[in-house]
Image (tube, rainbow over all chains, first blue to last red; front, side, top):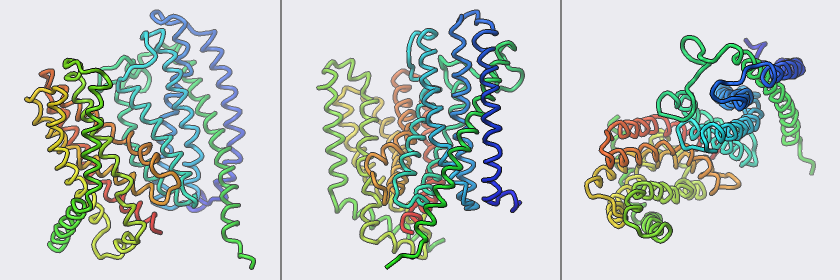
Amino acid sequence: MKQFTNPKTIVKWAELLQPVAGLMAAILIMVGLYYALINSPADYQQGQAVRIMYIHVPFAWLATMVYGIMAVVSAVGLIWQHPLAHLACRSAAPLGAVFTALCLVTGSIWGQPMWGTWWVWDARLTSVLVLFFIYLGYLSLVRAFDNPLKGEKLAAILVLVGSVNLPIIKFSVDWWHSLHQPASVMRLGKPTIALPMLIPLLLMVVGYMSFFVYLWLMNFRAAVMERKNYLKEINRPQME
Amino acid sequence: MKQARSFFMVMIRREVRLHIGQGQAWLGLAVFFCLASLLFPFGVGPEPQLLTRIASGIIWVMVLLAVSLAWERLFLDDYMDGALDQWLLMPQSLALMVLVKVLAQAMVNLAILLLLVPLVALLLGMPLSVLPLVELTLILAMPSLALFGAMGSALSLGAKNGTGLIALLMIPLVLPVLIFAVGAVEASLTQLPYLPHLYLLAAVMIFALATLPLAIAYILRQAVA
């Protein structure tokens, strides 16, 4: 186990994986966009507007997935005090916030023609909005201290407490009446979405996940370098 | 165990006395709550139907805002004058001390709001029959609000931009309290079962009571270190 959690090994793997994830993202999103925009049927109710789904759903899944990742690495950082865990959390947070914002924006643009309104205060939309504010809270808390190590530890606790929101988001469409459609892919039993739509959707989802991994590793490697410099700076013997 | 209990009683009495004696905090809460709630008849117009319709929402939003006024100061004085360092040295667990501090504040706030809420509710034209329920939601919600606020207060110790930070961190997390409290009152007003909302409110309280003192204690240790 030690050899896998060695910071040097992790950074080396990040370096190796980053271009792979980038290439995967480029290919999958290109193929996925071809299917999503050209080679897939229009919905029998929603018409062409259904194509917003192919970007809205990846953003929505990433919004919650990134938070899940942040919660896991925060727990790792707090429990085992791994030196890179908080850096991994910190470098994922801005991406999660942007994906959440994009999810809200694309959902709003989709909602206008379908529901006749840009926004409704129902459980799914509200819980995602809360997730967005928690991301913002994390981002401002982690930067609020002169000592970045302290900010990261405190923000990690916030991430863990805020993670109660994740199941609320996932099940909000089942627990409360909502304009938002119920789960049609990640559910017990068969997906209720039609196969010609499911294929481009999955291509886009995996494509955007790879894109996230690419950006995350880039951020992460930059954060590791920055941290090295910071530690060197504060540990340097003072010249009198 | 017995020692912990007597410690708890002594400390909570001391904290409550301090809160009442210092005055400004609970006076500020009372004044803010009354004045801010009474702005609404001027803002949205004095029509009785409209005010009755939104009274529970006004009251609960104002309770939330009024309580959040005192969040910033909760640990700040103890942090500045070094009392917090002494807490860390005490043989009793820090989580217990946090619980005492937070519950004392919650009790004082609760006492004031229990007195003022019926008054404001009547001025806004809320039917008398739901007042006991409103008071019950206050009782169930106040420990959660105080604990989440205390967590925000602890997180912001030593931070560069304290005031806005606590609101940004904690308002999203206390939203369920607001939703379930208003939900219970609204359900009762429309003759729907309100007990589920109360159960959820109690569940939030139990979650907060069980986990947050430990989290806050950890945060305070980091803040002093």
